[in-house]
Image (cartoon, rainbow, N blue to C red; front, side, top):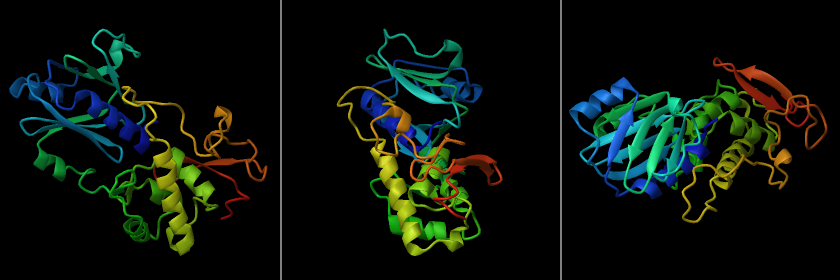
Length: 276
């Protein structure tokens, strides 16, 4: 599932491939995008930059036009050479941006909108984003204050609240709480200063480790499964996520699984290492 690290890597790769290039072709099956393309053609514009903000990805075109996308659960951006075969079925295609050197394909993207820079800044969900944990300007102190502003939330729910901190998803929520020995079901108001600092620093560390650029100039948007344990074996890559019933890697107690918050998102934790 796309979380902040996935979107960051996709934006970085798309920016490398597309920034400064003139669009030679644009296709979409989404009516709201087609209408804009008919009135303000995308072909012929220059791609100025591709950026990520939390779980949002924005492609900035010349002429004050921005394509904003959100992947939700199953969306993805791929980059290909014009002669390459696509890795997903053409029926899953939602957007195609062509340049002479590369083709960017958006598959199964559920949220895609054109904006001006002004309307983008005012778009709900974007305008209220918290500090992006992968941003060079990320401020741990400000992030701690943002979490403290929601004392009534469970820790797991607060970590997912994008208006507090942007970029964390369900996998990292469970992994960060485990690494800091904090129950995801505790209230934010119960956290000590050191626990709060641990959650923020660990979240920053885990996401940063999973966007480390080892591809050189290669055009890749995915480099393997997420890892939080630091272990080389792929089977040992995560502490608790998706390991319900399996022994905790620290104490051997079976990992538990439960739905949490109003959206009933699944949380994994060790009841012994993370006592409520």
